[in-house]
Image (cartoon, rainbow, N blue to C red; front, side, top):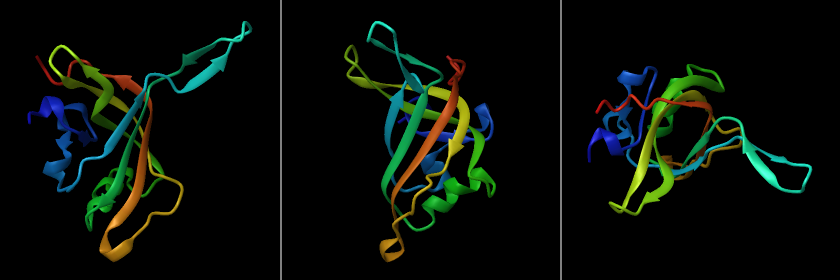
Length: 139
């Protein structure tokens, strides 16, 4: 696995680290939406507008994993970060997922985390206001 196709996060574009390098045990289930809102048009159709949105959902996190990610927020509910994430689109040419790098706001979930037996479960992190950074990884 190269850095081009793995989950990454950091406080600068070229300072991003893989989740594995940060010590996070499991990869998230990722969802990507290329727009933040759906507007109903006068003719009854709909269109997507706004910046992309990404969610990372962790069904289970090992002890300490949630704290590693939460530290990017520096005690706040949201903070500006850079991420590399999998998109929903499967590239049928080479049978692999597409990946992209973004800068935007990381927002911790507002609900309760589940904490059975020292693990943390059912954590969803949302990234909004995303701007694509096609220069990373460098070709």
